[in-house]
Length: 172
Image (cartoon, rainbow, N blue to C red):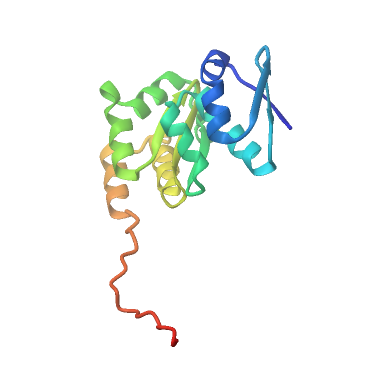
């Protein structure tokens, strides 16, 4: 049994039945305190998904965490800068009309959400590192073009099976 505090409790209550069915857990709440009951592994994934929903991620994106390839990570802006004007840094991360976040989404294959002074990232475990580094570069003041070129140079290439290795056939 796990207890977590959720700020956007209405979102969780509205989709409680669907969440319980998808995550194989029992969800109850007392005010903003949410209790999750189920198997240990199911509780862990449910906790991460509820945190992502509370962070502001869309329902379908948050449910990606259930598959073991996807992770949910957060970066606190204040951990990576000494500047006091957080609104300027948040504006740099979002970009004009959200273009920076869209470009980062395309280049890293990860999903981003900004809540107060924290950035949430959901993505494939292999791509999370590049996504985190790119956000940190922007927080520290790197030019957007430099971050984009860094991401293009450091793309993780998918492993392609060329069919060179043959499978041994069992004799009957």
